[in-house]
Length: 115
Length: 109
Image (cartoon, each protein chain N blue to C red):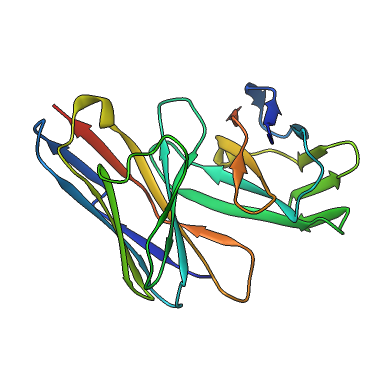
């Protein structure tokens, strides 16, 4: 099956720093990728839809300037959490859709802890 | 606004039991419904995808049904094993995935 690689798997940073998370589709081209966040014991919430070569579409309530998304190629999307604060601590997961298939394939997630 | 609910929230059963996990959604206008498995601290694995025109899908010991008109789906797990312990999420797709709250399953030997 399709593989989506997400790095890093875990990051601990100081408040005020920026953190970049990468999401790669390893064996297919993904014109669309999605970014989710998940708080403990809660379900996934869609943050934004990342489209290759164009601006990301953010869900209501998600700050564009805080969560920067770049989808510069058909196999890579990045999420940068700028000026991270403790309330940004969460589990972030990316997913990608194969153009000819409606199934979504998910990365392994990134646990962000902001001290 | 589409809302997805899963019942029960948690389930603990002995090995070998047959299980039914429930998922309900408020708006029947969906393209498909997916069931996922999530292991602690990990990403999601797609288990089954049911198109809106389909009634059920099967994969190994898993069977998922869909009744779009009543806004319900069930995931049936036959002969449960300890390795099935995980959180199971359903998600409906009107135009983007909307996830349920999940069912945390524990199967003990």
